[in-house]
Amino acid sequence: MASNNTIPINTGSNPFAPQEPPELLFLEYCDFIGTNISQMFYGVTVVLFFHCIKNLVWPRSPQMPSLRYYLAGYTFCLFSLATIFVAMNLHDSVLSFIYNRNYPGGPETYFEMIYSKPTIIIPNVAFVLSNLFADGLLMFRCKIIWAGKSWILALPATLYLASAAMGIMFLYQSSSPNSNLFSSGAVDFGLPYFAIATTLNILLTLLISVQLILHQRHFKDNNLVHGRGLSYSAIVTMLVESSALYSIFSLLFLGTYASGSSASALFLPILAQTQIIAPLLIISRVASQRAYTSRNSGSKALSPLDKSIRFSPRTTDLESLPLEESPTFSAYRDHTKETLVPSSPATI
Image (tube, rainbow, N blue to C red; front, side, top):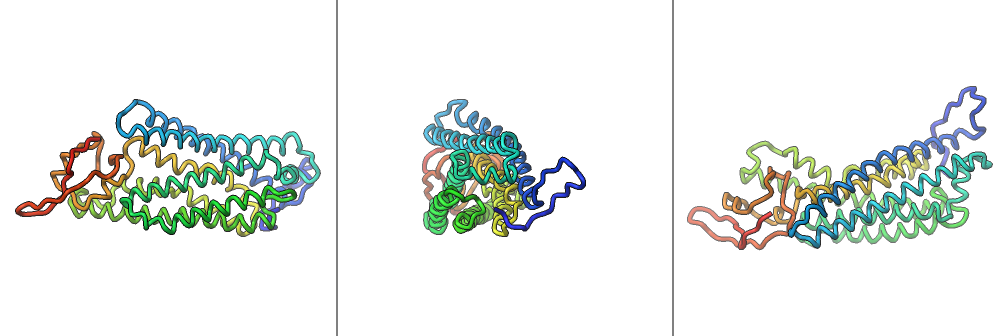
């Protein structure tokens, strides 16, 4: 159960109000509102899913067919996990608030009673798996953006493994008989799990953002931004690929969960969707050939000769950067300057 860190629900003189303690009513209020808001976020997930699949599978293209199909499979897995969580969470709400509304203690008491049943365990497993999937993609993007410098991922990889271990233990403890999200055993593993997951996401966010800022400065120094500073497309790239949306809701949930507030029941179902929306946004940009890629991060300098590399027709600054891995560059020295040119033609 949640602590008494709650906001009282004023039922006034309503004779039809349930005879339950204010803190329990507030928990039901947060659970109900969070479930409904998560349905709206799921609508965003559905739109992103079909957009990603459309751009990854159709039209057929010879450009990296295997990567596109891998991303399509990854997208389908994420969407499946999101659907499982939403469907099972909705099913649990129907059981609690419709079919067992008169259960002694109210719907939330019934919900806690069935917390060790498959109907609760399945969406919890989907939540942890989707988090691991999302962080895995973010780590992959970080590796690409840092041009294959594997040492950059040493600490994130350690945190990722710790997150997986804590997630498994959290599922085990919260699914034990007479246990739930707020029981002492679950909290002992739940807090480290959510804290590590949030830290990992913020760390990857910082690593990606720093490299993007450095790359934007590199563009400016080579007169490719024409003094406009950080372009709008670069800001969008940072916000999308650093999964800022997930970080915000993750911190909101972690803060309320750590304080024992019932408000955590509001943010948890929303977090389940935002952690899936974040990687889908990244895949959406990749599928549209607008993702930041290692070809650009691997270049030390750019010159007018780079115009021989044909990008997609909509290329402007960072808005439509190529998708493939970095080509092999060879340096040569001109009579007046040194520049870098591709050793073989590359076309997007």
